[in-house]
Length: 243
Image (tube, rainbow, N blue to C red; front, side, top):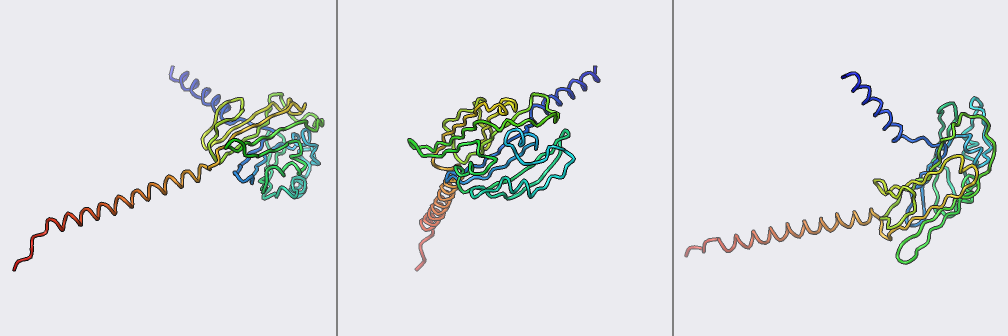
């Protein structure tokens, strides 16, 4: 019975681990600021970039993958590539990039992001961020080991409170993180992915600093009042001077 219990716990742990550590063939992590600037992390399998974006990269996992070629393809006037690295998983090559942009709306000028139309406008007292991802390149990547259950994802890391979003999960993870997922097969067919988020005008950081600032002022005021009160009480209780 003990062995069965241990085995059941191990299987449950493995199952939870598979749920928690979801594997994506293409994902964007967008750290957005209210002024429109953003840091975008792209983690993608090379076959996915070829199939989805017609990337000029080698499909052969044993071929040389030049990071300079990856950098040059992602670089544009509106997108500065800060770092590039590579890895392997399940027989496929992956690229990992950090990209900086002063205006998220200009990101679509870069070839890898040209399938997206980004918007950020202020409306009715909130900022409205949108991203519409349309048709993919539709290239055949061949037999690269895909099983049909692969996913793509766009994940937003947002700087202020979110009164509305249209993510199918309807959830906001800790730190104001919202994820949109789509099957890789659906993305390859060009099925549209529409993202919309409403953001409050004050950032969480500003609100937090304002809260701590207010608490600090209150604490100082309380301390000053206490010192004044003790000093005043001491004067009242001091004995009169002798003649």
